[in-house]
Length: 131
Image (cartoon, rainbow, N blue to C red; front, side):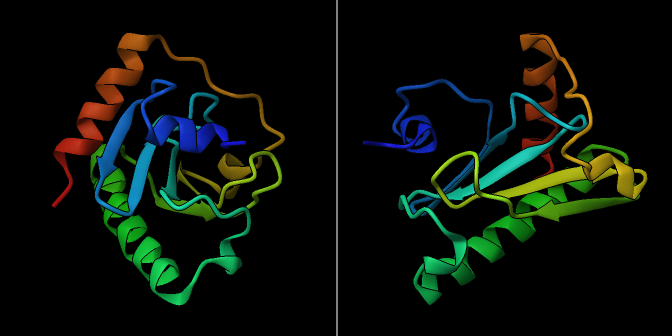
């Protein structure tokens, strides 16, 4: 059975896509900790980040770097926090969370709410900063 992220990559479930190439996909988290909270995934469905083959792992890190740089440019923040949890969806993924303080990346925090128009505006702002 395909993960929810695989279904997003295939277009079976809509997403607020930030970036995509042949191997990787970045999109806004719909239950964000902060404005701009982004998920970056390999298109290859592998449950555990460290089960990825080395080329895919390194490619994912490079793709994530590019998204994080654009995210920091688009969303004013002190830093972009990086988290790998991976228990909620059986598909390797990296969380990128704009932070003012370390508390901003606490996954126990209440999730932010945005309208579809706000999500689209955030998506466009980040995508416009991609190099």
